[in-house]
Length: 429
Image (tube, rainbow, N blue to C red; front, side, top):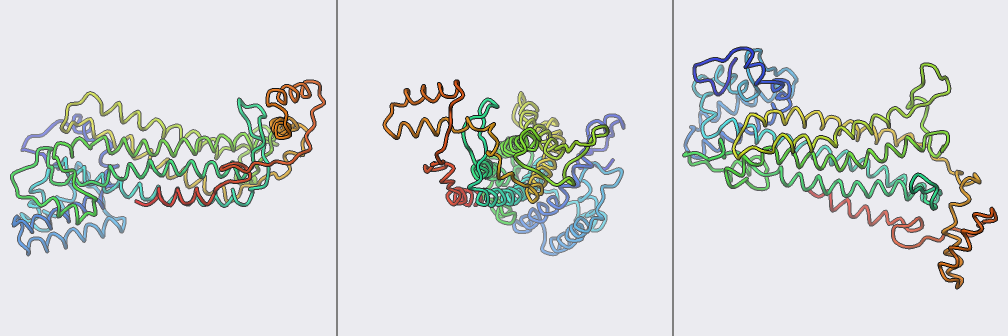
């Protein structure tokens, strides 16, 4: 197998298969970023005199051809090539001979992998930002549309106090603001340039790391070369943590939808085409989409813990353990994109029951409203509380007043404009 680290000896097929793992499959997702990093690197090498302008021109042209094959979907890892980095260098060497071999001057596969991953994760976070904003806007629109439609609120899974669909949809919109802030933090960790740190200790070439930072659009370098290598695992964990926050929001929303779709509640409805039936019970309309969103988000929540466990108990510097990070994080990213997309899609078809509270089952939903009404009329709170409680126990409780919630963030004052402003700020990265 063609490897960048081959020194003339070979290992057994069994060792090779075990150590390469899934890299050949997962690395295809890094192909375009490997070319981007290589182009920035050789431009810098030319600027410090390690490549001639003619050599740079030939290398850039050949890398552009490789990039076109990647974007065209025809790029492949050959059977005897270990990873994307080896494949790119092999193609350059085949085409340009010794010039192709010069591309690796001044870098290690360690900082090459790091820069590929950071460029990849940066784009993944930007995609998650866009998908989250789409979902946020739909939730806010639904909150505005159904702002005056009342909904029972529950604590301890028991009927509690009046809520509204406006409050419910708006709550998850605001929760996404916090998730966006987590993604912003992860993006800032990821958006630093490790290229030039080599194997973690720099090297004797006069590398211009500020130049590659500019060319690749990073906010700054990872200055200390050891710190650059320490970012391996930490970057992935920060992304996983941000995804975990987002997954928890979607998980709770999916759980609500599963419960609200149940005929015993009947709060929301989706077309039959978005539900599934039973092999034996012809009446069933199962919330399979929401159940799978809930389950997949639970899997995403485990990602940060897996990464933390993998990366602990290792001294600084590169260790092959890090290879498994892609096996953990890449599938989780796919799950996250899928859950965001499906949640957003389902909201296009949600139907709201606007007459839930016509059912006498919810008469006691207004006990606090009645207590508060009597307090506003001058009765001490504890006296009003006991009086209403006694009426409930005797079966004589009756509420005829209206809902008068006016404070910030209540049924009558959703503050959706303020929440939108918070999201705009959180999404500026």
